[in-house]
Image (cartoon, rainbow, N blue to C red; front, side, top):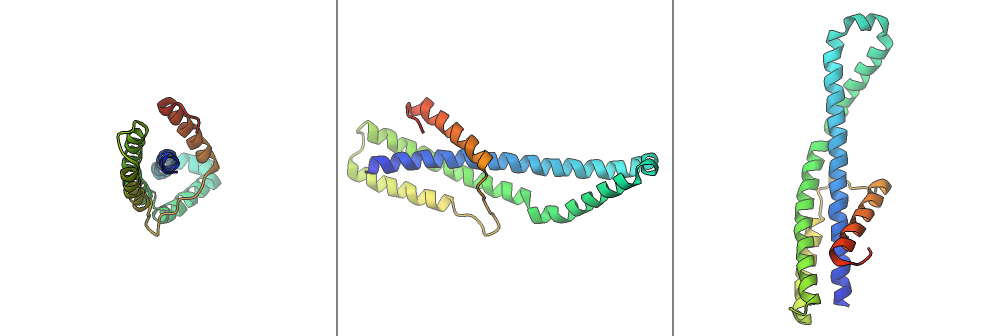
Length: 165
C-alpha cells in the first residue's frame, strides 16, 4: 500500500510541477503581449498623426483598449501571480525530488517499511504546505495545459522509470 502511495504522489507532484511551469509560461506571454501592445500604442499614438486623419476610428478604438488594459492590468496582477507560482514550483520540485529518493530507496530495499511510512508522511506534509496559495491566486484547470502536462509527465515517467503514466 505505501508503495502505491509513494508512486502516486511522485507522479502527481511531477505533473503539478509541469502544469505550474506551463501556467507560468502562459502568464508571462500574456503579460509580455499586454506590455508590448501598450508600448506600441503609446508610441504610435504620438508619431502617427497623419494616419490618425485617415483612420481615426481605428486609433480611437486602440487607445480606448489600451486605456482599459492599463486600468485592469494591476487587477490581473500577472507579476504577482508569476512570482507566487514560481515559489510554488520551487517547493514542489523539492518535494518531487524527495519522493523520487524515497521511491529509489524503497525499491532497492535500502529502507525498511516503518521508516518508509514515516518519511512518506513527512514529505506529504511538505507537499500539502507547498500547495497552499494566497487568497488572491486562483489556479484554474486548463484543458490544453492539462493535456500537454499529462503528455510530458508520461514521457518523464517512461524515460526515467520505464512505466506508463
